[in-house]
Image (cartoon, rainbow, N blue to C red; front, side, top):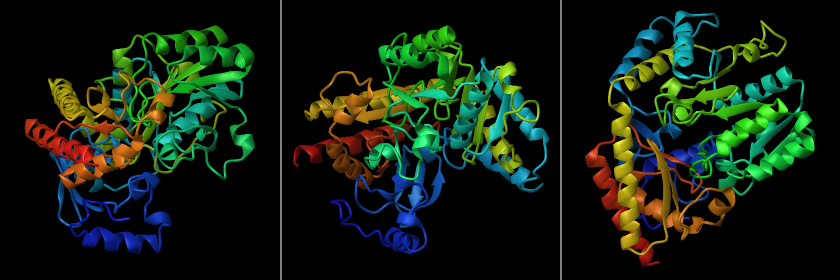
Amino acid sequence: MTTILEQETLTRSKQLLQRAKGCIPGGVNSPVRAYKSVAGTPRFIHSGEGAYVIDEDGRRYIDYVGSWGPMILGHAHPAVVRAVQEASARSLSFGAPCELEVIMAEKICRLIPSIEKVRMVNSGTEATMTAIRLARGFTGRDKIVKFEGCYHGHADCLLVKAGSGALTFGTPSSPGVPAASVADTLTATYNDLDSVAALFEEQGQDIAAIIVEPIPGNMSMLLPAPSFIEGLRNICDEYNSLLIFDEVMTGFRVSPTGFQGLSDVRPDLTTLGKVIGGGMPVGAFGGRTDIMDHLSPEGPVYQAGTLSGNPIAMAAGLATLRELEKPGCYDRLRAMTEQLIEGVLARAASFGIAFQANYLCGMFGFFFTNEAEITRYAQVMSCNSAQFNPFFHAMLGAGTYLAPSAFEAGFVSMAHGPAEINQTLLACEQAFSYLTKL
């Protein structure tokens, strides 16, 4: 399907897509990148610099994907590039302990109040998968509770009513996942404590843990209702279950200490990723000492990884975290995000477009809806996602790179300044104007 804004030639991206389809399923290595839900040709990216990415056809876009969250400093930040270059000169990996992973662990434990010990892994999926295994091993129970629309990676037991790409393609679970793998996964409604309480009343003695994205970013972006997260903590305490925060996306993104810096609630385990790798493949999970000491080699719960804690990812992540500790970073990020969202909302209203947005610090979500507040999965699913598609392409044609799905959060980086925000708002005017003519 050719979109209205592919009147321009996309020679290189089209050629690369055809080549890729011959050797990669769908031509991409992660499903949402295929543009299936928005149609058109996925942009193959050649390079990035600051707040911008440049595709293989030489087009420059203001980037609000940010590698799906990690590029909080912007692309090719000099401090991160320098750290990676210095580390890579000493070898890319050892498969043995190195000082950088100790420094990273110490920093995470210092910055995240609930984490007393941490283990590095290689992806968010690996972090959440192992946190679940650890919770089951520690409690001696099998069942877990997750929330519809929350995405915790593609481990079998978590691919139940998942968000992100699963929602994009209308398949919230996946063939190939045995029924036995999800038999102990219970699903509740995000921002609905009653739905959680009902599960625990029936099966609480068998539930090892609740896993939750405190701020879901895979059904666009939702914010927790007042007392919701506190209520989860109380339920877990009542039934001696563990509370797991999936902060792969929000860790060091929405505050210097992630969601936990904005809340008095302390989880038992936390999963991290994205920002702590500075763009390199990375993940981590950590929590209370008594729980973490159940991991091998201290305890019986097995986990291992050849590239875990590798020096390149540790160097990139540490350089990123050090930059984020500089005064004023999050104030700037918050200000730019507020300016962006307030401007987009004002322009949608001026064109009479039914539109809403959620945002917090450097993270946001768009919704085409008349509802004043979007807090639940069902509301997200009732939004006019079909209207998102022409909006996406109009923004892309005007040089603004958004996630190619109505169900993905967007990200602002420290490299976005007033010039980029103003240019984005001009693109919004064009996009909303175009929607009024459809």
